[in-house]
Image 1: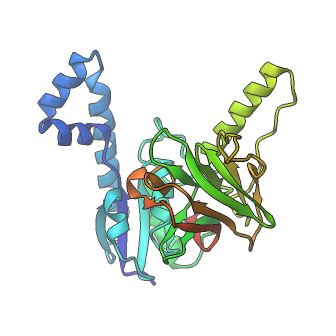
Image 2: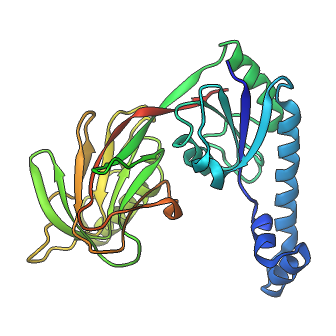
Length: 306
């Protein structure tokens, strides 16, 4: 069923520092000069490298194995013959799922003492067993709803956790928003759209803010949305909407039902962007003339369970 395994990795903090300062010695000098503990960086890096080697040895020898940095995932044309293994934090699963075209993902926790691993059911030494069970069709796969932002020019962006539609800097985003028969022009800090998997992530911080304000003012605090990973609905919030002669705040939060679109039309001459799962570097421009339809994606993330 599979011919190749892509092991998607991410750079450790030490690896990123070495890229920045050229050598381990210079990275050490930088950290220690700032009063930091360089040994923490070194230990984290050593544990991750060890996990990479354990994972490599645990994978079936009859499959081709390619280690792939997460930054290169958008450039790979994954096929149905590819099996995906992620080796990193939960965010690596999110940032990989949207590029692999529904191929099953075996998510591995390389450092259980550092990472809680909500999305990471396997340890490095368990990869071979998981792949073997998958090949023999004796393992469960959880299909997780993803969000989709589709532009009028055909560009598409998927999201495992959430989509952000707004401005790329700390200025107000301006756009027209439409949900069903409700439509208005808004000026806000951008629109956040969450999947069920992302409902405990970024969008939960919006509820935390609302709860804090309600408590301070003696009012009733809104309760966070509770959504399963398979929930076909999405939930959106317009962050900090401003009311003026030219902007309203009537369509600020709610569910996007399965089969329904949240429509946004940009009125920003420049600086508008759409990105997913916190990766602003991999964004699509959202400037005047851009029209985006946000809805549940037909494609799902497929996470292998222990």
